[in-house]
Image (cartoon, rainbow, N blue to C red; front, top):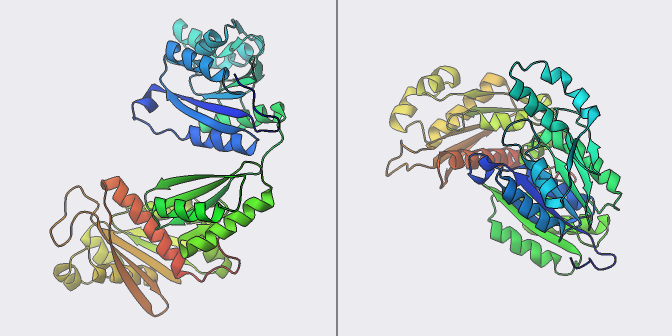
Amino acid sequence: MTPAPAGAYPRAAVIVVGTELVAGVRVDTNGAEVAGALAAAGYIATRREILPDEVEILAERIAALVDSHELVVVTGGLGPTHDDVTRQAAAAALGLPLGTDSVIEARLQPVLARHRIPDAAAQVLRQAHVLEGARILMPERGTAPGQLVPTAHGHLVLLPGPPHELRPMLAEALRSLGRGARAEPRVIGCVGIAESDAQLTAQKVLAPHPGIGLTVLARPALVDIVLIDEGVTSDELDLAAREIAEAIGDACYSTSGAMLAQAVIERASSRRVTLSLAESCTGGLIAAALTSVPGASSVFLGSVVTYADDMKRELLGVQEETLRDRGAVSGETAREMASGVRELTGADVALAVTGIAGPAGGSTAKPVGTVWFAVASGTDVTSERCHFSGDREIVRARATATALDLLRRALPPPETGPA
């Protein structure tokens, strides 16, 4: 391994273990979270890999990465089932024996008592197998401990897969390594802007700011611009984030890493404006996003999911003539839904959404992906039509993000800029 230059940040690699992740049955979220934590702790993550629960493959990649990185973090494969093979793979990669730790073994006794099959009990005890020389990271939740193992060039960290179990262990491991922390990455949230537009705008702003790394992450209708400390101060990161937000304009909703729903709740709370929703094609996704924000109850009054036309009539007062002549997916229906839920809840601002998420139900006049939004505020009721490409879940995700953005724009702007 070529040593890092003096003063340079050490390199890190992240391995996420799970055959189901490789197969696409589940989506990896641990990799990005771990890489972000490493960046904040003074490491540059240069590799992220998703690998199956296979000893030979894991051992080969762990051996290669510990030889080229100062820190390698592996998540997953530490539980009690037959496919939890990360310990064995790590031992093979480093050429270290596995021993049984008596403290962990004692902690597992209550778990053993719940198993009647001897083989199941033996599998549980595999969680007490520890690599020689490892520091044990005791679980705050769950039963599988983590391990911090010295290597020839740095350290290997083994962590369980469930996020609520790995987070405290990762924090403990990074504290024990004692690296001088870099500034936290700055995450600039944007909505309704193309990924390439966000990237080029950010690169132009960053041209006179050497020492700031840039990553752009896209989701349906949303883009996060991530600024990484590669040799600057926290104040310089803040300045660059503000300049990028100003260059992007109103499409930027946050420079603090806040989610779009959080930005909506914070803006409504700062202005003491109450909100309500009427949802059809999104089926409660907008309400779920808002209520995931702590403190949302101070401004969010409620949501009505009116999927069937009868519910639109009976709960929201949408006129029979409107549904017959204009259809459930129309600007007129959306406006009557917004007015109806505002009257029902007494909210200051109400939003409605109705659309065709697919895969069926479209027509030439109203193809799949057609979604109407309406906002009722004061004496005004406005509507807007969008067409989203993608499958059903992507259409619903784009509609949810667009609805949150419309709510944000309908609220008085904060006095200090984006959240």
